[in-house]
Image (cartoon, rainbow, N blue to C red; front, side, top):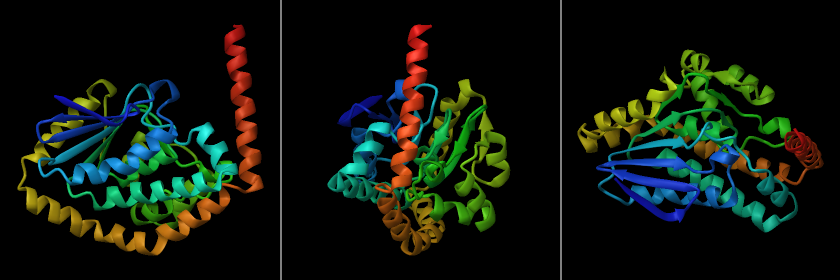
Length: 269
């Protein structure tokens, strides 16, 4: 295996023949999307798409989480820094478009909580394997944000508008078993077998006729392309506006206070 460390230490890309394993690498922070990780996620898809040797990709998180979503430092910075806010939205656009248009199949190996952006990364993948005990959740709205990075675009196509609204409005957890039942995931796998099963599936896909597989993915993803042209820009623009809203500032401040108190209590004990 060969590891590509050019993008950022927070995103590790490892080559295994024609398979690329992408690992979110902030395990102590539950793979929350820091600035370097978000930037790397925006760049990795075009880089891998330019490599004709890539036949399939497995996307997962190191540690106990797939991704906890937003990083508090990033959230507070976008509230006050308009240039950074625009950069964040541009990168979100690149992540969405990069995954939808990525020519080879992407398998999400959801090894733990997939929250916010983490949920979107799973939903934008082509096949989704979920570990027992893992879950999906999109709580953007709970912190005063419009969910612009994929949920409104992808969820209605999978579960229908009513169920999509329920998931986005309430931000509740969807268990691995329920995700399979709703069509959000393909199957549930024992946690200690998840990555092996995802890599085996990637090898099966890589052995298929490459052009036919890519053209089939492209044909199916025309549904997402159509949704992207109609939904993505509105969702991203309204998310950008919500980043500076009093609601968002207030909700994040409360979460930060709660997090600090929990940290103080753990240090005392």
